[in-house]
Image 1 (cartoon, rainbow, N blue to C red):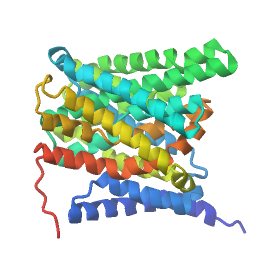
Image 2 (image 1 turned 180 degrees about the vertical axis):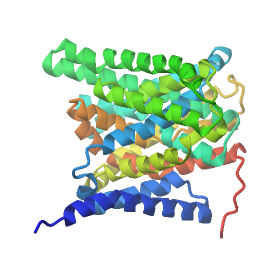
Image 3 (image 1 turned 45 degrees about the horizontal axis):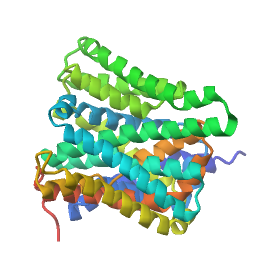
Image 4 (image 1 turned 60 degrees about the vertical axis):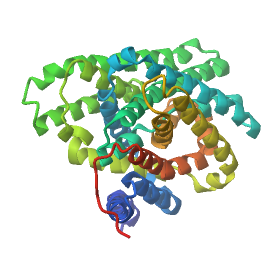
Length: 398
């Protein structure tokens, strides 16, 4: 008689784990106003430590689902980007680019203290530039955040993500060129992926108004069109070895420029968006190897300090020039603390596309990922609260 117990355990593991994460997230949010995403991460970390082989054995589609989940968030982030604002207030664009370059340089320099190879230092520095759109957007939506700090954080997060993807693709292309001398592989890993990903997202954004004319816009049907467009983009991007994350961000930006209406009720993509977001945070946390966390605590402490200093001091330095107070400039930099979900999926994608140093980079950043995933959403939440830009007055239990 065939023993079906291993298959049954693998089949039940994710539904049960997601249900546990949802319950924990709701309870901790009700008791202590804990960001739900931090609770999801905590459950994912615990599950990864206890049963990682069961969670990831025989489930090749999990990575694709996680990419779709993050692509939905990046579409929403891109939709909130107002390109005209960069023209009217170029300081926002300038600080985003300068801070990204400074973070990259500082992290690359400091990573050299820990005997990491040049390739690993480059990829770690590129990932450190990014902020987590999933963490920031989910926390802002949870608090119904709106105001100067919230909007700046959204725009700077998009800049950070765009620069991070570009840097990662360039590093991957440089590695292919230096290891094999294959210029074609290098081009496929960098320029081709960047240009085609943006072009694909932009083209789909141009088509969105035509798709929406097939049905009423202000109904759940419109939300389904947005979700299906992102799903199509993620599928094509993975097939062509492109970046679904960069494509989804471009899709959101073009959709806004094309005057496609996304109502507040359609944010987070309803129940399916909530479920995919829950899965995303549990999934990325479960990928972390706990033995590597203890080995990289010192590296994490140094790199996190430099990353936080770069983001906060740059925003503080230009606060008055860009039209906000010193205090709001400081809070804007602090709110950009989360980075993990976006960085982990970028690493996983690079590894699947043949970038071998991604494995070493993942191990080197293990402790940094854990700290950022658990603490980052708290920092964003408290920063938006301190800026008085939240519109949620839920009671906190003692």
